[in-house]
Figure (tube, rainbow, N blue to C red):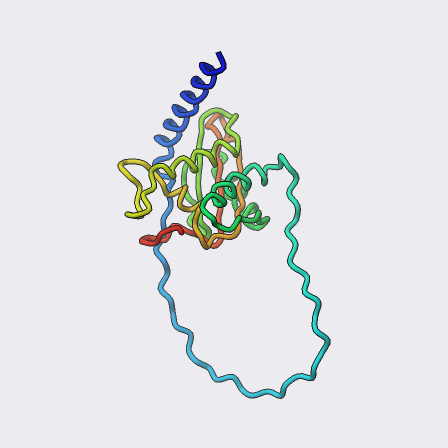
Length: 207
């Protein structure tokens, strides 16, 4: 009986992912790498050496503790589980990015449109009908895109998407902020995550 129940859950979850993937087909976001402008050389004038001072005591920066079960942890933890499997450094929750994500989610509250903010950050979007979609399901729908990612060709196999996955595992990304809103008039749930520094630069591998 338990096996039948587990099989049913897997089938329902897979169908849900396929529906979300079909509806979210335009939610991948790629960007060209901006050209590097060389900095002109400016000679530094000589200045007298400062007098010796006591050696400062090093105190490592502290990251605010996020309570278990908080919306931040619901978004952050599955990102870091995935990155850990690939030997990548964990992301940290960033209040500035979370505020930006909430701002954009509020813009989409009235239409639930999978439209990117096209800001300075990397961005993953999710939409689901109804009002019960949780952060963990949205993140998991991006994680499973890894099955479509071909590292050797640095592309998505077949007709599958993988851009959400590659942003999640972009080596240089350090910070994460996300938001979720239930849209007006039963339009569904809109979820957005922002990443800094951004990833998904055209022609580059994520790691």
